[in-house]
Image 1 (cartoon, rainbow, N blue to C red):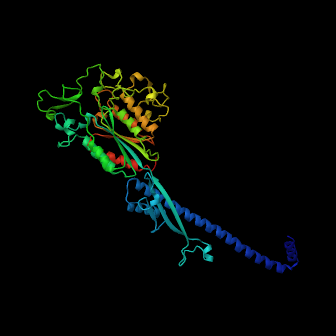
Image 2: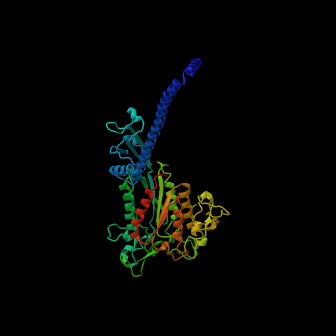
Image 3: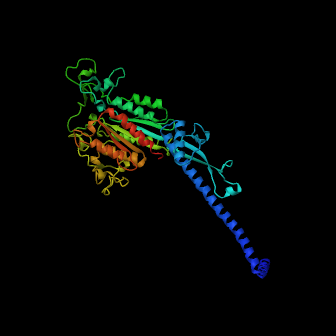
Length: 495
């Protein structure tokens, strides 16, 4: 400090003309330093701006590639998609790399995950530092090299196919046609397979072909009078196809009047059963009005959804997968399991028809929660018998105001709705539903569109985080519907 004061004192003693000259030198030196500091700050800012642009481009490219990965795109497809997004974001790097487990072992995991890694490079061109030979993009200099790497992951998909195999799944053939008889059309040696059931199986296999194995998995449940777990989780496409091919339409136990339930034939049938020219349909001759109609019903939707929900707990459980249930049926639920805790055919639904369900689809009954059903009395306004239930379907005019705590009237449709809640609320699985045929919208007994109302409810049709309901007048529309479901799933990158 003393030295500085002495210099200042000496400076002040100089003549004024000498002081002015030295001030100019000091200002010039200070200006150079200030410009250098400002230039360095601007160049550092330019560097980070250009790196951020590269980073955003690589992130977008990785996301785009992961979306393609979800639907099983080839490596060249992933490369093309990533490069397109890099270029759209101002990065033109012919040396950019796109890797998956197939090309980079460090991305391989157990169980397999759909991880995509994108790496790209760019050059930061500076403005001031090139004066001293740093960061110039003028040849032969190449600027400051930049590199960015990003990983993106598309969730693997666990899909449970829930398929109606009730006797009515032969409805494309008229009565008297051989293909109307499940005993006949289930037999692979016959030229006329069950329709629309065969079309359903073909569409389901086409859907499975759009999944990406071994990353995705499939399980299969079928239901008629009861529900069957046909196939637990597998990532083997031929195994899934074989399980679908093995599905058969429900066959009644005999030929009337020898046993019941049975396949009904016209009087005059003399050939060995079944002489399909005389086949009329499903029958339950052991039933009489007022008695339990369980033997006459073949659509146990609730039991099928219960098995579907349980499937997500079958090891190995993949919490990070996208859980999806696809339910296809040709009518409203009319069976509740044939007794036990899940039995849902109360005496109030014995007669008149519809069997095992309330004639009014707007009436919602609840039962003891210990049986996995949901009850609140009184129900919260806008809810559906469950405080956890999202408030949606009141706006659709379906089951407004919640349910009634009335175990004695808890029926097959209530059971099905409870199990749809189990899949969606408890298991956090998306539900897509398909209504097949006129009975879904024009049931002759009770509320005509009871089936459709339930399918909309199960899918949470219209909810932001829900699935979607589809209606197919015949089997011909199923291929397009399964394609739409595949596209819908593909847009959901994660759970």
